[in-house]
Length: 426
Image 1 (tube, rainbow, N blue to C red):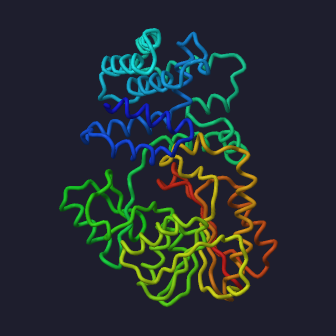
Image 2 (image 1 turned 90 degrees about the vertical axis):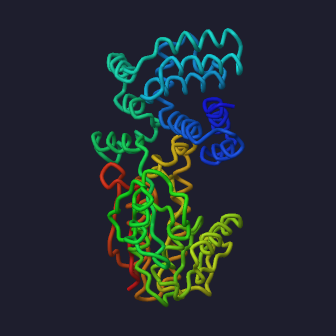
Image 3 (image 1 turned 60 degrees about the vertical axis):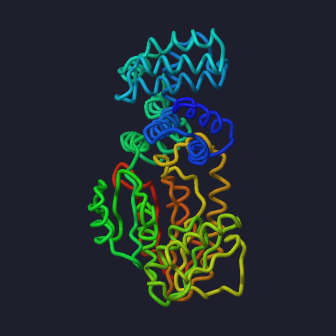
């Protein structure tokens, strides 16, 4: 199985709900005997197609006499990967992209499928995006939001939702930023090293890196393969949520939605591994991830357990100095890292998510001692999950003051889209 065949198998599994892209891709790569170059190509194709699927499908529509729903899922994905290579990957010769796709169409379809694939791909060139947008602009009754959806490859409901909350220029910039693969951010494990020491080590190993904006962050182009105890992969937006909680050595801290443990371990590191961090998650297998992360980082003060943060426990009232609530959310702020979210998240999810967030915030706020601090955070940029939750909470809980409110956007801050609200109990 070559890189392109592996890619269409992963895309097929993702499309039909057999797994998230990163899980399905890792599983196939681990089974394969591809070299590092081909593995990188397979990964590029999978994430590229997931990122640009709407746009790729619009290009196919222009040249296909067959409606998309009538095209075999295998052939459709073969067309997508062929067009993606031609339009978006400069280093792939067009002939190679076409020929490999035609061969795959023969294997996963039949001779007619191969002829169909060949006929479409022979019409595609590097300027296809520009031609598509010019074509769409001249179409009668083309809605502006529909044009933005196709140009940025985001479902129209996401475009519509954001246009209710932000101006058109800003929305377009955010959505375009979602399509750019970001650098990987490492957070130095300050129990074992410092950011400067880790940076020197990376430089000695000729790893392309630069210091981040926050005190412990380093940005790298590729994931390192050494000394995992010396760092954790964590976006600076998530790091900032922990810094704003400001845990001190000896504090009793609650991370109520903790898995997979990146924030939990950072809290413990900021506490110099002194005090106690209780870490909750509703799934046993995810609690194990937190325990594994703590062990890997050499942290002893984390106590991870299975618990639903929505379930109230009277015995915990006022027991914590600091409480972090990184609540379940729509995840629209991390699309640049997880393009699956565009296709798996649905507008009807928002109502239930907002309800869960409110219940967690109401419940866990009771556990904060007088004078203690509460941080509410999400990895989304939708106001109903962010600012509106804060307004609702403050009206209901007069015992809390809002200290600070922070919005982060990928197009402005070069971080995940993120929201942080800092409260203190009077």
